[in-house]
Length: 490
Image (cartoon, rainbow, N blue to C red; front, side, top):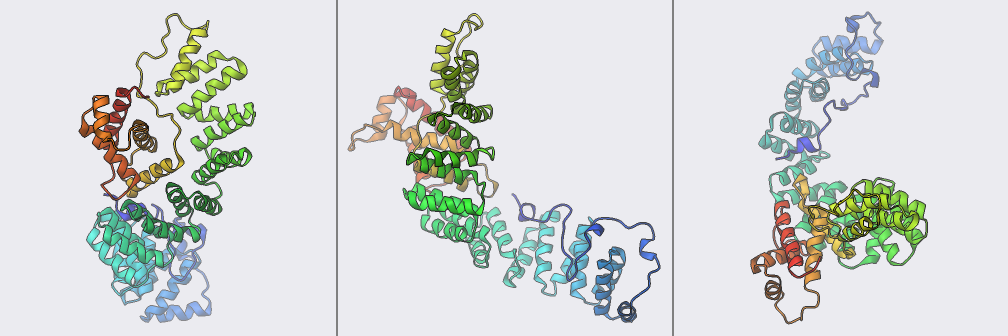
């Protein structure tokens, strides 16, 4: 189980603000020189008055004196006066002592002081206490109690932490309740997460509502996933609008840039498509690099095409390696270079690359005697064209299945499952029972084909069944490939 305290908590050396003061940056985490706090320093009239009152037992004066010590970097004197104030009931001093100990690596002491402050109803202390209880002790029930108190009192971040904790525990009703509270308080991350939960449950209207809410507030992922949903539903105009919102929120969003490139390429606007694909490519996005290279080929810019295809091929993209091999042969007659990239793609199961490799080996005079195209044919690589709505569904399925760190299937594998079914039923009579016909023709058992059909339906229509696990996807992929092989398809 992944606790909230380890997912969105303070870092190991937290930069936590003390209440009511700004500590000089140079003093944070630095131990003063020996006897530094004992150096004689003249007191100003205010400090003289505070000192006298604090020594007389005034907790407010002791707290204020601790603040002045902290502001000038005397952390140990600050701790001394806050302890005197906190012991007689000053809540802000108890809170600052919690921060002090958390910052200086004594979290158990921090828990004690935060608990003292939180016990008076201090919501901010309750949040920090809950995070430490999760991180240090794994005490979920106690953390939940403090977070609920803080959330009901309007503490920033408490509702979201409760939502994430509820998700970790599989309590989706509670997760939606607290995410909704957080979203309505302005937390766009929770609005986005409500969209993910809605999509996984099969409620596309709810997913669209919350993703749009997040997108209009400037949340890049909310806008991007709204775009995917619109594209999956066939509404390309709204999809394009949403992808533009994602780019506006995050100028280097590779997914949105790639999707915009695909939409403009469908309109045959090669120049705009290249601009978008290249935006994604420059972030290291492998698909963006491959698509930039392919558009450059169409535009006749062979040097640029080689550069981008080379980057994607070096990142182990089979289709980029295949196209780079074609470019090397057509532009430079470089059979040796082409042979290298065709072999790389063929080793990943790229069928067209395997065919080109056989041809190049037959034409090459510098090949080692008897070199074979491939000794052990790999599993076939799905290199057929993918419909944009299907790839959008596959990406959304990966998002939903991998929520909160759960293992997620690969997007390319899901595309192959979806595409295989569309391929094998093509041409079957409408009134025919496809499962029975496919079983008779391919020799596969009907239960295996039914399983493939069921998983595909879940990917396209979430909420009808649990999301497939990576192991289930691997099993269904074997069925899909056996089915294509049995039907004489690749």
